[in-house]
Length: 226
Image 1 (tube, one colour):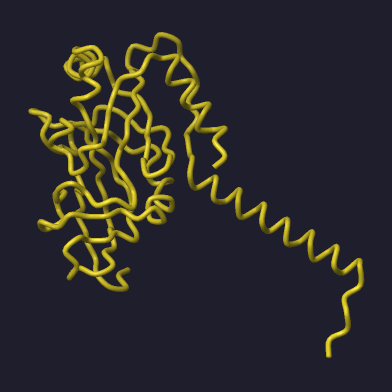
Image 2 (tube, one colour):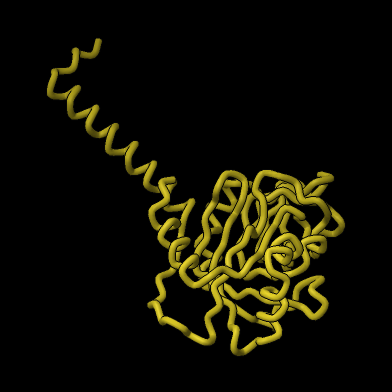
């Protein structure tokens, strides 16, 4: 029979439990919001801030992404959280016609990523001076353009829980970039993309820092994978 703990031992156990709980919550918050700090340069001609919804987590895609062999997919929230660091510093690209991906047409960079409910939100900069046609397209139709443009992620080393399933469940992946395209052409029609005012981008980055809380898949694995 184990002896009853002293008051001091009980106090120490409670303190250690509280510390582990705080560390776990901090770890979860770190996974849910990440950003890379860039120095502010007022009026920079080649930095056009943007923000958008890259994808939805734990929700099946509306149609099969490129590389999914005709299968709709579900990116699990856990997989998205673990892959958040791989998004930072990755490029955004676009394809002539705005209907797909072109990884060689890199027109910007992702500097922040965070999860809000089922939405994976990203922010960053477009290279406006290098791609003037890009700015003309995404800024040209006022608020109407916000309902037209969307985004699509690009993955590598994606792990499918069971490739026999009708809807593939992605349990692990690495983000390698994202495409800006017409929303109707994206695998998820609930994605979004918009150019933000320079002040808006600064506020968005601050919000990410303080937050508490096309499947262009070149390699798809099954089973225990690598």
